[in-house]
Amino acid sequence: MENEKKLEQFQGKIDANIKIEPKDWMPEKYRQTLIRQISQHAHSEIIGMQPEGNWLTRAPSLRAKKILMAKIQDEAGHGLYLYCAAETLGVKREQFLEWLHEGKAKYSSVFNYPTLTWADMGAVGWLVDGAAIVNQVSLQGTSYGPYARAMVKICMEESFHQRQGFEIMVELAKGTKEQKQMAQDALNRWWWPSIMMFGPHDSESAHSNQSLKWKIKRASNDELRQSYIDKTIEQGHHLGLTFPDPNLKFNETTKHYDYSPIDWDEFWNVVKGNGAGNKLRLKHHIKAHEDGKWVREAAKSYSKKMNLSKKIA
Amino acid sequence: MKNELIDYCLRLGDSSLILSHRIAEYCSKAPILEEDLAITNVGLDLLGQAENFLTYAAELKGDTTADLLTFKRREGDFRCLHLVQTPNTDFAFILARQFLMDCYHQILFSKLISSEDETILGISKKAIKEVNYHLDRSNDWIKRLGLGTTESNERLQNAVNDLWMYTDELFIDNSTDIAMNKNKIAPLSSNLKSDWLEMVESALKFSEIKIPQEIRYSLRYGKDGFHTEYLGFILAEMQHLPLLYPDATW
Image (cartoon, rainbow over all chains, first blue to last red):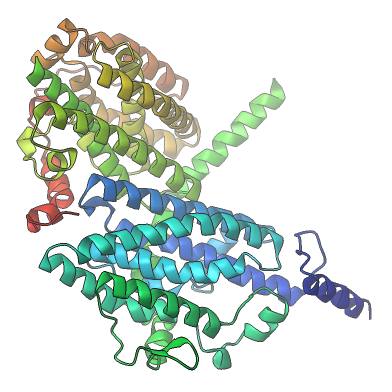
């Protein structure tokens, strides 16, 4: 009975757009959904550093190198905000990392695709960050306070990343024949994975309805996907590149772009761990974590010794 | 004198560029996320310093740019110190290398802010603020590793032992140093040594790390265009795209 009353008050707050804060009562399922979603988001930022780090030592100009390095640093920062936001739900960062390493926690599947040419740095920024922004802008209005506030900060930086990625594409598209081919090839490879980032169709999405009711999600997967496609097509035309979908055309009735059916077999195959990079990305993260164990132990031991000597003094 | 000034700018620019490259290699491999952020920040500052010095060198040379100097120059024309070329063996090496360079940069830039060359003075004024922060960070880590656990102390000691031979070069004067000093553009490298040693020794001793013996190694130096075996691989990776697509701009 008491729980029902609390639940009613909780839903009342959500309906009145009052943010839920860490110390407020919340249903266990709300807490668990947020733990899953925010930590997945944090892991995505951290794992996402790898496909871009892959080109950091090969960036072809000093400016490009600086921008890419700053971008990867931003991503580490986003990961940090998000781990902090997730920790307010009562789980420590070390535990989140353990779940990631055990394969219990996921990260965005798009980072399991390889970055094969410099143009991928353009396509990842333009398309992958472009898709992420659509989702994140919507999440600025999410009902959990710490998550919403982290999103506001993250969105500001992500929009830079998207523009910087687009700038690389512009440079390549107006460059030599080989550069233009490089840009087209990157668009061909990243277009579908970026569309898949929004997850399954609404009719197939396991968590969507409850998350929309609790305003954890503010728009459905398909709504967000459509909004991303509509705005990105125009940008692609500006580049003079073609999208790898013969059925992409503006529908005068719906005022949106129609597109071909998504290859969900590929999506689920990559989610299940069979993408080009799944093993690689996770191994890399686990190795860095294990290699760093002695450093973390040293820092902990030093800090203990310092606290002890302060007490004695 | 102009040639020596160019040579000096290349030394400073190339050293920061290559150290930044080593840091870039370490991206997403740090022991904790906070450290990934911090070390990338240092790498970014170094890249900015490199760009400033290389831009100045390009202006003085004429008919070239900082990008051309970075991506189209041959190994023997680079002037980076050997110390920055050493590989990322483990966190202790990365940190010890950084600490030794941070101390060197701190002492050097605190002198270069009174340079009679206005461009060098301007770059150094910006750089010294960044370097003070770099040194704070690496100095803190020297304490953590030196006084943390037996393992961390041993690893740091090994790193310092192995890297020590490369510090010799930092304080050797060549004809460029002599010309820079004569024109009041920069101090003699040999004049930086006692301050550097004092700074390094006091931090290492506090952290229970022994100072390696001073041995005169038979080395020809990076500042004279003679490099370690490592540099060729660094450049092969760094210059790969502009060399493969010579007509492209990026």
